[in-house]
Length: 243
Image (cartoon, rainbow, N blue to C red; front, side):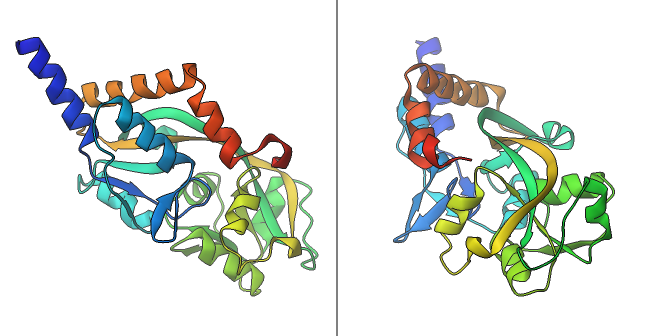
């Protein structure tokens, strides 16, 4: 009886969580007032595995959600890329998705990066505060960063001539622009070699019990074995559209 009650308690704790997401299509976004995206669908399926009702997902600007997770004002945030620093700050379930990150500029900018170091010589690189692009570029010695609150703001700066480069995942960029029709991908070009490679996870606050994280990881692993994870990848990243 004690064992049974402990399992029920863990399942309840693992499903009734304060979930946070960034507006970052196609990973997580709102459409018609409802949450959608690869991570949204996956989290719902994980919670179904845990016999719990789907928790409401609240959207925050990245920097705010990140700080809330740091200080225990939320239980989980997604998507989050793994870094050496973050591995000690949070607990992770995944990896969920992989992508390689490049710089993008406007086709008429005249910018052509022969090597990554050339990007340190441009005027401004627009980045979102405290996201993986911001943190990694700082660690790589970039000092010409123009920080904003969202990737949408970053690309608006680029398109309006207020920034010279923006970093973005190669697989994600076309879907991001589809969900932000006021942005025009056709006027942009990818330049230079890849900056770095990212792996995206569901991140949990550091004080989340290891058992809860283990339950979520086990549920995700089951979804992979059952082919449900691959179906979600094909839904949001059709193989014929990823280049």
